Length: 472
Image 1 (cartoon, rainbow, N blue to C red):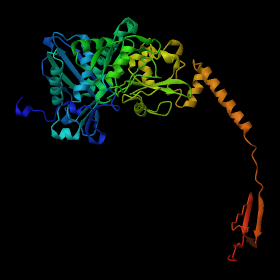
Image 2 (image 1 turned 180 degrees about the vertical axis):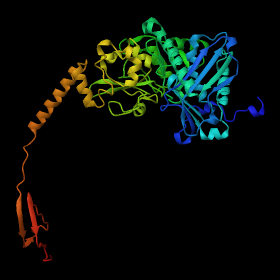
Image 3 (image 1 turned 180 degrees about the horizontal axis):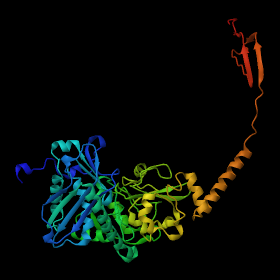
Image 4 (image 1 turned 30 degrees about the vertical axis):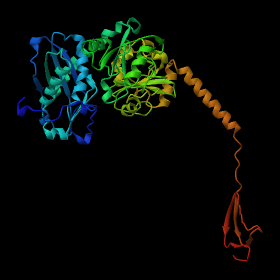
């Protein structure tokens, strides 16, 4: 590489996990304030890819206004004798990995949820064009995944093109997700595990099965199988599922052994189909959050696109602090959207019969997964924005939890009535009119003095206290 082509910033795994705060960013690409953002990998024939080429459709980094957020799309096209459709999502998920090797370039999430930032410091050092990010990705991918023989990258910042290709990307994601709906965990003897996100959540381990997509939503069982085959030393490895200890909760000896080993002992057991006991951990890339609502003994669900507070008053960002970091927190789970369509969705906890509230933004995306008999019995923020409104809605609609809610409220009312009966009668104090008080109060012989006025209003003109010895 010639002198003028040297990277202006460092490229190293040491920058994985780098966070760029808002005050330190030059620009933001995608993220929560932007509607259209995506990244996509497409397998192509050898003659369709110009190896090493980086395209920019729309303004380059040095043409974007500092401090602003922009629509953002990244298209990676790969070719090679071993490159196949099954590998697209696997390569796609590694964009997150390799992007974070670039000093001053923060990459979070995946698919239609990407959130990237360029730091002011890196921009001043020369990271002022997407060509540098593209060149870094091409070099890293080809070094780490040698089955990629040719690769080109296109960055989109033109709002209309980002929006146009967003629709195409969604169709590709949906086609990938649909492949696993015909097989079950019982049909295979191998699960898979991914630790791609351990740079952000060191003790998180993802277990991927036919019935449970990765919580980032980017890797299903077929994708994981392909990844383990072509990159055996990579973040995705096969997991012999071993003995089934509990078919309802989804506990397998092989998964437990993998979790303990890859989390370095931080976690030892996983229930794949439950939010309680030993729930699956989360990193920070989950597509949605499932959270327990104790007042109604049910679950709420929310996605990243929901901007307001959930029914318990907490927004997605606050709930995320309870879910992420690779810690097992009962009642809180990070989930991939495809898991809502799984036949084993939360089966140990009652499945869909336990879901009481879904953010409207998420409901649009999983409407087909909701059982027909529950469609009008699960609230969104439009029907219930508080717990009180939710309780009323569930009872009126005859939700499967309605009877329990009524029983609970009746029990609480009975307890309150019982407590009121047991309480001592209220004594109304006697009020004494204002009385002038004059004279001398003598101290008792033991040298102390105690004056107690109960239920009286006293007006004192003069008070003289004489203690032993005659001093006043």
